[in-house]
Structure formats: structure tokens, C-alpha cells
Image (cartoon, rainbow, N blue to C red; front, top):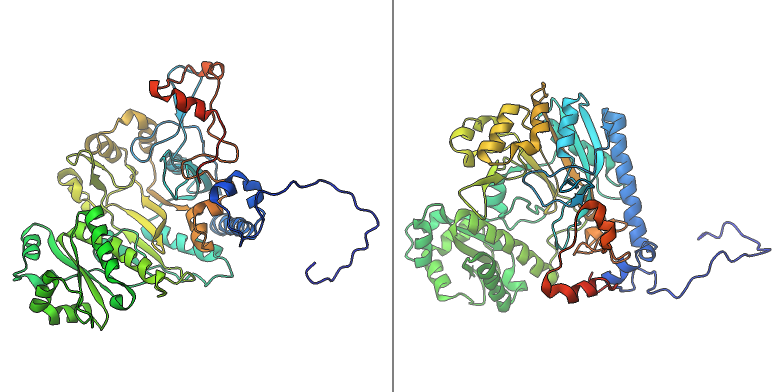
Length: 521
């Protein structure tokens, strides 16, 4: 023991097993590539940080079970892993069956099952649910992940939000600052207008300000053009002490970033700076509205204004991203903006129910999933202007990451059929079981799912969700330890009536796939 309280006198010693030379030292300060850590994951698990992360995860899940089952009468119910294709949402993993041409799918979430449980009278359901999404190569996503899945009957948004806040408060680790409830909330429109995103990091300011009114009679060309168009606006953020910490090349890279990613011109303006870095356009803006800008943006010496003009949503999105880029740059120079010990929760509500499809803007798709109920005030718009309908969806955001999302569901079979068939043009036969169930007196119901991996990642301060999962996949969905996914011989595929069709140019690739390698992380 570290205290030396117990002395042991050894009479005999038997060697139970010997240890080969380790591929890396089991010490947190020893740098190891992630590929090596994932290849020898069973050794990496011995490290202090992995032990801490996984034990904390276990403790938090245990407290969540206590809170839901013992204190609030929830029933822990397992739902199937082998299911069928669901319209909309993420891509699903396909599992062959022994019936020719018939396939199972792994569920993206237990969404339909938990709604069916409400019809079945199990009015408070909860599950630590395994979910699967075939999303390909996403840096901080896992093809299989865990949700704290919750559904209740006869509940409204306030009830779900209040339960979730209590759940997090009860399960929160004792060595962290306690969670303060209730959490603040913003509408989707407010979040976009102030932070340029639906998952804002509210630990620091640098909010987006609409300065269109200052420039209604401007002579500056690009501002005139923007304001003459529908939804046109002039937006800006104030980078506090920008000229003190940032160099001229930083502002050049910020402008390039906005142009490359958003096709948006962003203009740095230096109203009170000792150094004159203003471009001719910025100079003419200051000649017109220096005092108005200083007053509206509350500018002090060394502050920089990043100004852009264009369509409201596009301009806000660009500045929202630049807000985070500027925070990264300032923190790299030693300024602390986002306190790692601070946990800033936020509800985002009143999302649109539908969005135009990217590949075909004339058609609609669900902003979240097709079972979300429309806002009661917007019900009539569903039949006239569906794109304007708000949903009863709510997201929970922590430090700029979405850690949960849920909604009040459609419990009326006729309305659900209309949304699926008429508005989303989905094949209703895929969901005939759910529509049929809703017709048998389904109660009003709603729920939420918390992303457990992401939540634990933020609580522990881990750099990646892979650091809070015992055996994660690499960012390409590979298991570097066991080399999964693996190939199967044709005779083992025969009972499933499927065969692999190799493209002509991939014979070399096929032989490479059969050789074990660990090139990636």
C-alpha cells in the first residue's frame, strides 16, 4: 500500500505469468500514436487516464439508473438489435438473413420501439441503448455508440427538460462543480442570430450583432448590394483585444477561411487600433460610421470587428464558425476564453420541422426525424406552408457540443400518415406497424436521448470519444486490434444468398485487404 501500513513477509513466491516486452510504456506522459494504442487496447486500458474515464462512466450510469428506476419509477427495457430499414435519418448497417433478398438493419436508435412501448402502457421507459450508424469516415463519431434513451407518456417539453436536468444533477461527479438548474434556453432562431449555430458554446461572449441599421444609407458598394437583397443583412462580431494577440497574417487566414468555406467576404475593421491595418473599404466604413460602430459594438482599444454582409443565415453561419476560429487563435496565444472546468448547459428549442433537401430544394426532409410533432401554434401551416412549421424538438447543448436531443412525438395516426406520405413522400408500408399501433389509442408521449459517449468525453475532458469507450473503432470504422471488419470465404456467404462482386480495378486492393495492417488511427 502507498502508506506502508501493511507489511508482508514472503515465504514462497509463485510466478503466475511472465510479460513480454511491452510495445509502449504504460505511463500517461509517454507519447503513443493512437493507432498503436488501439492495436494494443488491452494494454492501453491499464493507463491511469483510461481507468479513470471508464470507472467514472460506470459510476455516472449507475447513478442514472438509480435516479430513473428507483426515484422516478422508470422501467429498464431492452429493445431488439435486429430490425428493419427506417426511412429518413442516417445510413443503417445492413445484415443479411437466410431468406433470399431479405435483410435486417441495425437500429440507429430505439425510436420506434420506445413509441410502441408507450402504446403498450409502459409509460416510463429507459434503456442504456446501443445504436448503430453507418456514417463512414467521421473524425469524432463511432459506428456503434451508446444513448441514455428515455420516453414518457402524458408529458410535455417542460416535463422532459425538468427530468433531464434532475438526472444530470443527480449523476454528476462529486469532484466537479455542481450542476445548476434550470438550464437556460434559446430558440433555434435566437441561437443562429447570436452564435451562428444551433449548438453554441456559451462559455464566452463574442456574440454576433446585427448592424444593418447603421448602413441603410451607406455608399459602400458591397454593403449596399447585400442590403438590397431579400434577407440581406450586415453582421459583425467583436474580437476583444484582437490586435494585441493576433497578427496580420491571422486576419488574412480568417478572410481566406470565410471565402473558402462559406463563399463569404469577411472584412476585419480596426476602429480604435494603434496600428492602422484597415483596408481602403474598412477605412471608408469607419469614415461613415465609426462612432455608431463603437457605440453599438461597445468597442475598446485593441478590439477588432469582423464584419460581413449577405443573406442572414449564411452571414450568421460564417461568423459563427469564425467566432470559434478566433477563440482557438486567442487561446493558442495564451488568452483563456473557454474555462475547461466550466460546464455551460443550454436548451435549444423551436427548430424548424422540415428542411429543404440539399439535392432537391423543392422537396422536404425532416429536420430531425419524421415522428416529431409540429408546434401546436403552427398546426394549420402544416397543410399550407409546411416549410414554416416549427417542431416540438429540443436539443441539449454542453460547451458547444450537442449531448442530447428529443421531441414530443406525433401520436395521431392520421397526422403521422400525412407527414410521411404527403410531405416527406416516404413509403408508409415500411412503417405500417407503427401507424397501426398509433390507431389503437396511443397516448400523447415524448422523450429524449442523451449521447453517453459525448457526455462522458466532455465531463472527463478527454480529447476524443474514443478515450471514454473501452474498445472503440478507428475513425474509419476499423477495429485495429482484431482487424474487423474481415472477409468471409464464399462458402460461408452461401447460406445468405449473397456474393461479393469485386470491381475489376480492385483485385490488388482485395489481396491487400487479406493482409493485416494498422496504418491508421
